[in-house]
Amino acid sequence: MEPSKSGPGKEASPAVTGAEKDNPASAANSSKSPPEPDPTADPSSSEPSEDHAGPEDTTPEQEASQETQKRLEELLGAYQETLDVVEDLPAVVWVSWDRKRPGSFFKVPYLRWFLTYFVTYHINRSLDTLNRRFHATAALAGDPDSNWKTRETLKLYMRSLPSPPYRVLIFTAVLSALVIALPLQSFGNVFYVLDLVGALLRFDVGYLGRALDDNQVGPTIRSVVVLLFGLTVVGAVLTSPFGLKRILFNLHPWTNEQFSSTAARGHGYRVEGLYVLEERVFEKAGIRRPQEGRWDLMFQTFLLLLLLVFGLCLALVTLAVLLAWNIRLNVETGATADVHFILPQMSWAYYALITALILTAFILLLRRLVAAWKNRSRHARG
Image (tube, rainbow, N blue to C red):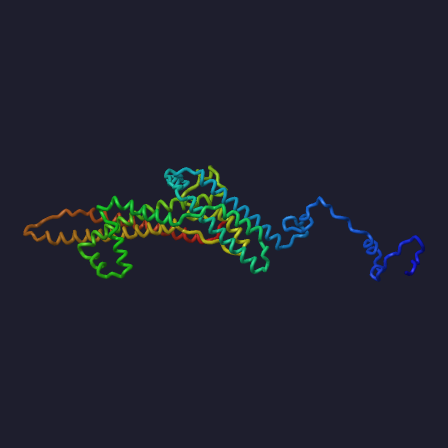
């Protein structure tokens, strides 16, 4: 072994590369040993994290993910607040029809029955759409951990929601319609209409012909009237909690003062409050907010059709009364002496006036309904 040129008692200096000769500072730093890690420190704290990254270390993707997470948590908080409000509402909620007189004197009753199911269904549908979108984003990005925290937040909250009993609701609606129609069976048998519907599905021309016979037209019409009355009552009972749900969503953040000062007639047009929070979250996710069911507008359309049919029937009655009056006039003037008739001028005019009022109300309500359909199709406004 060749002795060291540094002399006895001295350690040999490490070899110096050409790069270290050019940069003496790096050579000095390389000769120092790195400090030992603190055994009490958390190992995970030394790794970069999306949540603990500094402003200078945050990428645009991380900023977008944090913003989405923040708005999602705000939306989930609004959902939970709405569910808590639902539990505290009375069985019947009275809301003024309009803010101005005389509409402010009229109160519209809203039932709390099935309100939880309508709210839960809306939340489940919206969050399920977001969850599928985030899973698709992670799959297309090739990173299973992409938006992992957001997806986990959605998963945990969706587990806390009860599943709406759709079959029970449908069975209850049909059973309620029949229970309402049974007391009116003496006026019209609703089961006769069900048999008629079955004949339509089977294309039973013979049964349909017998149902439309001269002797069966009256019972058939009365049975249809009873069935429509039962469906109208059940539809009103189910539409009432849906309208109350829209009021709660529009008034978010909800307060007693807002509820007492709001007007029921304006919520058919409005898409505000909690809908705005949904719009922001879905906009961050890159998709459109799923369209809300328009059950209240569909029920109003059904009522308008009934009003139109009633107005047309009343117009036919007015025409029939007018024609019958003219026919009686021609028949009763066959006497040899001069006969003077005082004709009931108000008989047919009375029917005509009622028909005009009904058709005018139909036109005004139709304009309002069309405007409500258009406004509900637009984006939410904050």
